[in-house]
Length: 351
Ligand code: DAH
Image 1 (tube, rainbow, N blue to C red):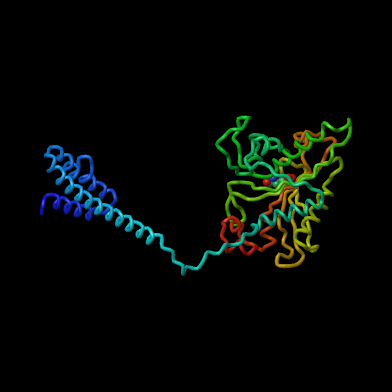
Image 2 (cartoon, rainbow, N blue to C red; image 1 turned 45 degrees about the vertical axis):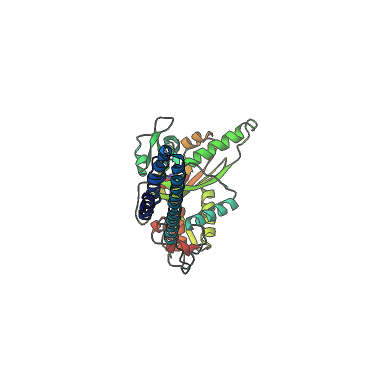
C-alpha cells in the first residue's frame, strides 16, 4: 500500500468514528484543511520535476476525491441519524383520544351581578364601575370616616405600597362605597353648568357593583369578595323609597313574594340613621330565618356635601349589599370560598 492509500484509509476510519457533525468537520480539517495532510501533499508537488509532478498530482487528486466521497457519505449518514432521532422524539401517538374543547360559561357571581344589574336597571338605576385601587380620601375620609376614627377599624384593609397625592397609602377598596362619591361628583360636574339658577339637579340613581378586598377568610368571608353599592339622591327621597326598592328587588331576585324584609338599627359613618337589612322567606328550606343581606341608611350630610351638593336640599339613601351572599342563598352554596377556588367540578354546575 502506498502512502496515499494509507492516507485515504486513515481518513475513512476517522470519518467513521466521528459521531457528531462537529467531530466530522474537525476530522475533515485534518485532511482537507489549509494545513491538512492532503493539502500538504499538494503543496509538496512544487518541489518535483515536471513529469513526476504530473503523475504524483493525478494520484493525489484521486486520493482527495476518495476522501471527499467518504466525507460526504458520513455527513449524510449523520444528518439521517439526527433526523431519525428527532422524528422518534416527536412521535405522534394517533391512538390518543383527542382533547375536547370545553365550552365556557359565566361564573355564578357574574350571573348574579348581571341579575342584580338587570333588576336595578329596570327600576331606573344607572350602573357604574370604578377603581379597585382607591385613595384614602375616597375609601374613608369622603365617607365621613375621618383619620384616626375608631370606625375605620370596622374594616381590615389591604394597603398598597404606593402613596396617593395626599401622601396616604393607596388601598384595595374595602367596600364599593367610594363609588357613591365618585359617581355623585361626576354627576354634579356634568349637570351643574347647564342648570338655571335654583333649578333642581336631576336625581342620582345608581348602583356600582364590583370587587372589594379585606383581610378576612372563612366559610362566609373571602379576602376578595363582591359588593354592590346603591345610591339614590334627590330633593325628596326617603327611607320609604328604600324599603320599596329593596322589597321589589329581593322579590324579583328570588322570584317569590313569600319574602319579608326588616330594618335593624345599625351604625355606618356615612349614613344617619343607618340600618342593616334582613330578609326572611316564608317557605322553603330557609323558612323564617332572618338573613342579613345589606347595609343601608340615609346619606350623612357630610357625605352629601362631599358629593358637591347642599345637604339642606338634597337627601337620599345608600346601600351596600353582598352579591356573593345572594349567590350563595340563591344556589344553596355552603362555602363562599368555593366560588373563588376555580374548581370546575363546582363551577360547571352553574352552566
Ligand atoms: N360599605 C358598607 C360595608 O362595607 C356597606 C354599606 C352600608 C354601604 C351602608 C352603604 C350603606 O351604602 O349605606 O360594610
